[in-house]
Length: 118
Image (cartoon, rainbow, N blue to C red; front, side, top):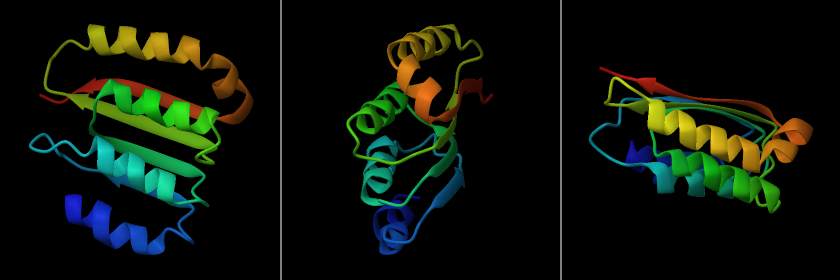
């Protein structure tokens, strides 16, 4: 997936408006590549990602949105985890939601969930 995220998709950064990705990347972290892709695509308004991600990825996306560095209107993220329980991820996502609630309520169609992939 890394070459697709770093080489192929950025070639469309001036026109890419909607991006939907679903992949099993349990063997490699792609958080940074995904974030850089989102930030480079100035017309991107719809993002749907189902992948193994860190919860911090969502927080970084929201922070960049708050700073006006991206123009997302829809953010749908399913964070896959190798654990059966997602209690810790759910707690962290609730904390992030509380911190960015005003932004989410005013600007985003927002759906983020931790999902066990076992």
